[in-house]
Length: 139
Ligand code: CMP
Picture 1 (cartoon, rainbow, N blue to C red):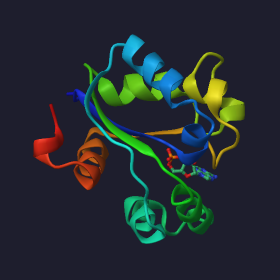
Picture 2 (picture 1 turned 135 degrees about the vertical axis):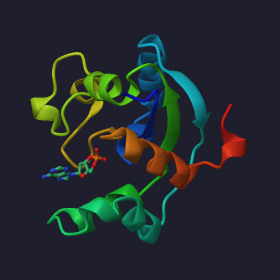
Picture 3 (picture 1 turned 90 degrees about the vertical axis):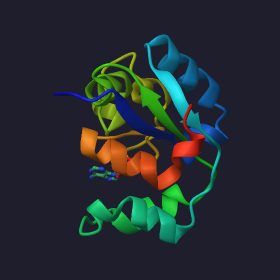
């Protein structure tokens, strides 16, 4: 059974380029309801913890450095089939491979500065949502 929650964060490149508003508009127009949202900045240690699953990958160090380089906008989103539908909306991790019209095709600069994160499973959506938000911050 598929869940109705996913976690996303708008990454430092998209926040600093002023694309957050346009991206949030696309997310809402695609039928996702924002349950929680804030502006935050990760320390390198916190970014390392968030991306711990990638710690053996060659890009882990750069990823943690990049994700702590400026403010991000984490959100919890609700919709039927949320994880899969959201990954379709944002497109492939590498923006050169992303379908035209997807968020990454429109706004991402590179595989590192790829504008937005989306959970890859229902289980990770819960873990990632809990990383940023308490129950009291969800409406
Ligand atoms: P994200 O969905 O946030 O999850 C891990 C991130 O690592 C990914 O987006 C990319 O921004 C980044 N990354 C950098 N290089 C790679 C790579 N070769 N494969 C997958 N992810 C990568």
